[in-house]
Structure formats: structure tokens, C-alpha cells
Length: 142
Image: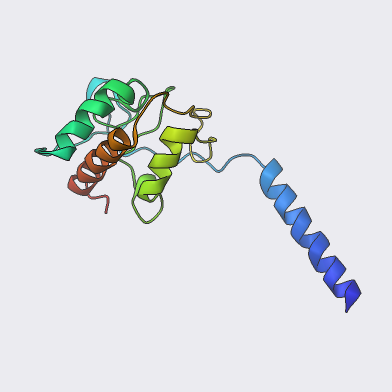
């Protein structure tokens, strides 16, 4: 019994090591067709109100340099957030909160690590998430 358990532990450790050392996952394909202002994907912008509008303003000031004016991504700078990779069932709202406050290690795209957004407030993050989710819904990302 101990031998089987030891082999299981060794196999699990080897698998975990392989996951840490292997090349990153292949980069997801952008949506066909380029978006506005050099964005990687086309983004249909909805009518915005309230927190969505505030979120767009915060996004423009704090996020658009890398993620594009409409969150369609900028080649060589940052991924499109209006992409199925960032749908709520795969990247919940907390993923955006953690990315903004702590940064995030590159894992889906080859843009390098994202640093934390210095000085961003929880209210600003909440508004940006509200904006991104609205734009995602309009673009069929549910």
C-alpha cells in the first residue's frame, strides 16, 4: 500500500512540475477582422449609462493603452478583453479585480506579465468590470 501511495505522490509531483515548466498554452486566436484604432478584434460598442459610462472613462484613462480604446486588445501590448477567453464562466469578475490590484502572470497570451494598476480604487475597478461585461454581452460573450 505504501509503495502505491509513494508512486502516486511521485507521479503527481512530476505532473505538477511538468505543468510549471512546459511552454505556455497556445495563444487564443483573435476574432476575425481587425478592430478600431489598431485593436486586435472588432468591438461593437453599446449605449452606456451610469456605472458603465464611468467604467468606460476609467478604462480609457487606466487600461486602454494596452487593451485598446474599446477593449479589443493592442498587438504587442495587451490582449483583447472582448474575447471568449474572458467570458464570465472562465474569468469571473474577481479575475479582473486581482489583475488590477496584484497584476497577473501571463498564461493565455504572449504579452508578458501584467503589472498591477497603481493607485486604482475598488470603485474604479468595479466600474471597469461593469463596462467590460456590458461590452462583452453586446458582442455575444456571455
